[in-house]
Length: 170
Image (cartoon, rainbow, N blue to C red; front, side, top):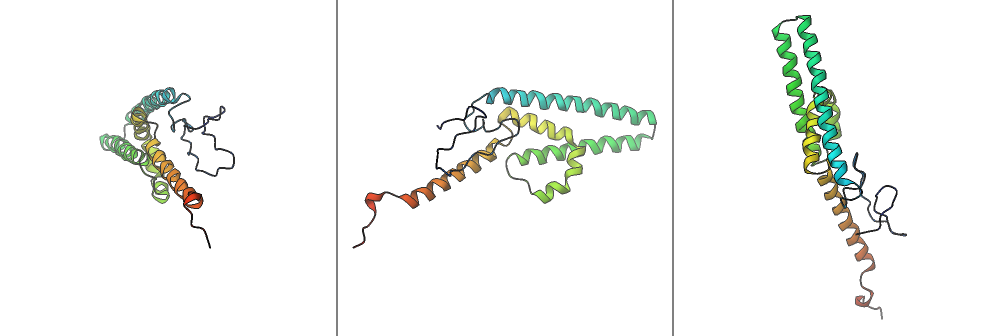
């Protein structure tokens, strides 16, 4: 497709060109553009890493649950804590999943920061499941990159055009 920079796998922009450049994704850089430079290995690593992190997080939450049970606050508090983590994880999963297909609203994201922190297991699981399909966020970035390329190409062809078809002033 285009020349590659050996250093980071970013498509090299030709000299004098001001075309759009792909936005790098976390853990993937710009390898998502052409699925090269270890893209498959990175997806496998992202899947395994997020699944391991989710499993370790569940283990930590189990220790927290046992600590609450040892303290003996009663069944109501125990159920409330378990429900809080379950609901927050479900909401964090949904929010993270949607963020892979459309840009999240910064204000809404800021207001949900606490909920997303409590439901971190849901976010990790969303990252795991998405990395089985594609690099998380790849679809969104690909759509934006293709749109920017088409706009740039249409602006470039409008400016230059075909000189043989230009009308001459007389």
